[in-house]
Image 1 (cartoon, rainbow, N blue to C red):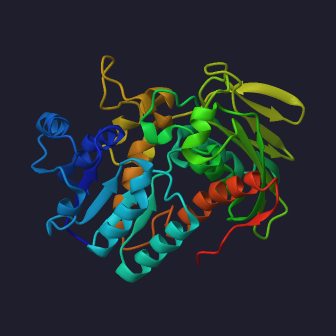
Image 2: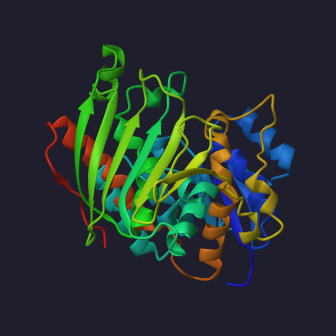
Image 3: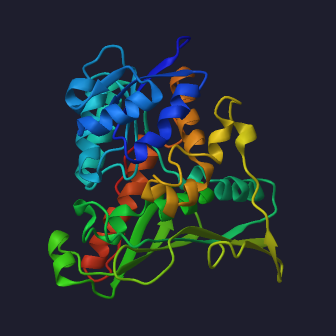
Length: 366
């Protein structure tokens, strides 16, 4: 593919973070944006000079001048919009999670194969500077043989849009699941999960999920490594954190206990605080600055960006991988099979918790 990838973005809350990245990417052109609220649509489009403007997703994906769509809409819309865009002949990038049911995961993987287009789930953690650094430590032998992996995502969602209220914790688990499976280099095989604590009856009534915290043990395909993942969304006092820890026979990386206290590398029995480098040098120079800079200023910051500390500088890395996969006519790093597996871990974990901790096998999507 020689011409620039003509991109469109759907959803301009968190999605606005990607507007200047696609505009500045040497292999992309941002031709359209979509937002249901017309005033918000024009505010962002005017600010960045985006020509194509749509208030309806269905209308946008029929535009023949669009090659690919990046979906940043509410979770309940992800699966339907992804499938519709693929069937309209568009490549699709979608924020997490891929879907909310196993049936939707199967439908998306089928739609990818039928369309011949690329699908990428835009999981921020595995392109964060912390993850990229630890991946280097694994690959250069510093960690040694991985013995155990742990992921956690604790976030108070009070005050977020209504569809979040009472959401089962594991239904939004990819930030905790993705780093452990990525570092293990394999997909999940099965999961056992317990639910702990209780949220208010008002929240429980939304989805029928009573648990404040869900904690899961994951078995990994063809691997002796095990992983543990914990997740909370409501009524659990804790600083916001998306974290992972890697236990190795030579060294262990441990996520900082409180923000700013410093990540720790245990070499043998000796712990030391380590500095995490930025990875802007791995990007085209036109978008390298976006590892440390976002769209929103101090008076108008998007909550997901603020709480996630800019998602570890991951946004330009994600956009670059998606665009380059199209240009190079190859699968993106987080393709439909990987995305379905990571998403299904959470769905199956909640099933396990609701049935008293029974083991649930993760479906195969190959």
